[in-house]
Length: 299
Ligand SMILES: [Ca+2]
Ligand SMILES: [Ca+2]
Image 1 (tube, rainbow, N blue to C red):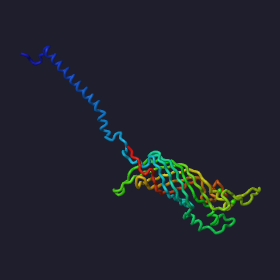
Image 2 (cartoon, helix red, strand yellow; image 1 turned 30 degrees about the vertical axis):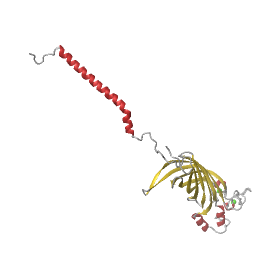
Image 3 (cartoon, rainbow, N blue to C red; image 1 turned 135 degrees about the horizontal axis):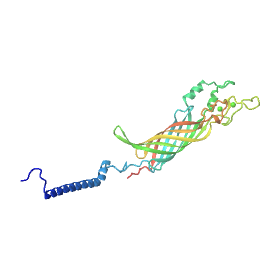
Image 4 (spheres, rainbow, N blue to C red; image 1 turned 180 degrees about the vertical axis):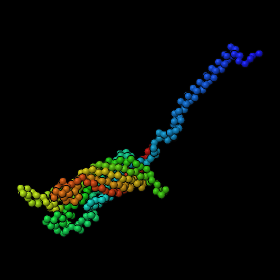
């Protein structure tokens, strides 16, 4: 009769070893199958995490309101914060949209000068006739030195990185875009000074007989002619339909100018040295017409 603590026989030990080997093989097989399944399913799981829109176009079947279209816009432009003369102008913008985001264009405006409130106040404070020894200009001398801008324009590149749709009162949906623009500026300026624009009249002789300049009022304004410079602008289109849009923008035309036509640097004479590289900021509103009238549709 067997007793507790008696060692197993030879056949019992062999059976136990076989059972352990079988268990290890089963565990290994299960682990390998699980690893293979994980490798196979990993891309599918990753794709599912990125969502169904992964790799898709941002916008499908989009109306191409700019791409390949010519934009022509009758436009009104007026200066903002001019010192002496507002420029009130009318003209046009022409722009060819090479891509949805990039266009090349030009602007041309014709206009007239309108006194600012500052000019009216200064004129009222001035005497009708000038006096020798008193540097104050007469009303006529002040007026004849001011310049106006009868013509100005631009050649520029425009970047339109933003576009979308706006809802008006939750009912009407209109397309819009916003753009930045910059390039070359040109401006024609003129004055009403009768004796020309480039003279600097001597006002006597100094001790060694050289011309002496003490009175800028009889000098020419040095502020008329064709001026070249640069311009930058920013604006937006609100599309009324597929080929008509409202165009609102600010554009700054920068070039050398001396709007008062009088002595700015204080050397008692008017010369080209009185000109500075100045901003001429305009607000513009135009009606943009896009051609062809029917936009293409993206894929
Ligand atoms: Ca002089
Ligand atoms: Ca001067």
